Amino acid sequence: YESRRGRERAAAARLHESGRDDAHRFRCNHRCGGMVTAAIRADRVAEERVLVVEDVTIAGTDDGHPVRMHGSIRADTGDLIIIQVADLHQAELWADVASGVRRPSSGRVSILGNDLATLDDETRAWLRGRIGRVFSRGNWLDRLSLLDNILLAARHHSERDEDDLKTKASALAAAFGLPGIPLGMPDGIDRIDLQRAACVRAFLGSPVLIILEDPTYAAHEVMLKPLVDVI
Figure 1 (tube, rainbow, N blue to C red):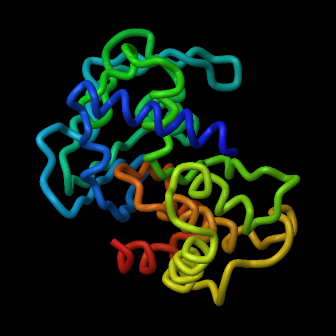
Figure 2: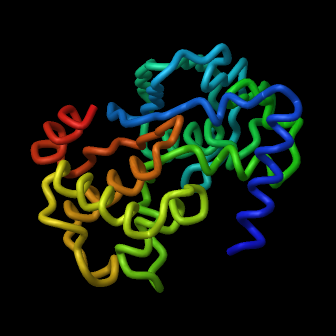
């Protein structure tokens, strides 16, 4: 853990030395939306766009069938962007590209003015750590408790102590209609409560960018109002 934290600080230092220290100036919150939503909020206006997906081509497969999509996204501080796609698989592909998990077949992706293709792995991982995400597939680690799943990314990418993270997580849980963070393992949690917990995980740690893959899926009636209220 300490080794990883040291590498992340070094990555942040490399951005700072290159004059790209926007990541330190953001204090950000939450967004929701349709099939894929990218949203940013900050306490102060940044000179760089938070997210630029420029003239990108995404190629993949869906149940053995080829998928090819093309487009651009530009998101400034405070923007809410909804991308309507055909299905959750396409939503996942766009989210992977926008968060730097998948490299597009062509085009450019930058976060806070940093072209992801030009960065080393550690710096790219440091930037990805500033992104919150609700995954269409859940993306829960079955060997960790739900609480540890929720706190995992924030523990690695936030300077907040454990008690502060738990307090913030509990407050977010209440905002999404949970009496607290459910105890137990993910496979023993109700589907709707898992969706609520996924939102808590995405919004925890003050990310600069939040990407939500259909966050109200299968729970629209009970999830929409809490999401709008948090926004």
